[in-house]
Image 1 (cartoon, one colour):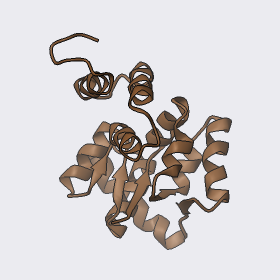
Image 2: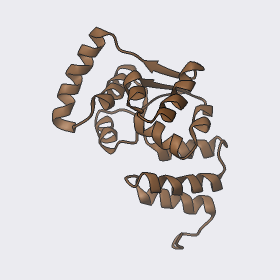
Image 3: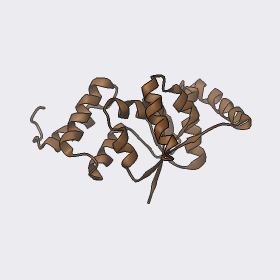
Length: 177
């Protein structure tokens, strides 16, 4: 079964920062995002890197017409009250809900909202797992990238990262990193 995934801003930023964007787009997945996510990439190089994949036809970017913007704005108003989600988060959440695709997010709040809505949702650790599984990344490199990632994004679940680093480096349970 082919995975069709919608990415939020955090996923792109994390992948760019740990230099795994090319490997990510090598996965046998159909990747989508919204134009709001593209616009949120505020570092010029980040936006350029992601837009390059759109130009090549590898990344599909959902744009919004006036009627869709009205729907999104109403959805955002409802979500903002209970979840404090940004309009960008709401754009990928609503798109995922409409299409029934998988959501890839680095936002804890967005992940929680999506899970509660019954959406298939995963984070950057899942992506790295898949890169290892598909042999697009060695276990040693994956362990290194996770250690690099935790320095950039301390909100990630440390226990999950430590478990993988130990596994991929062959460290026995109970031994420290």
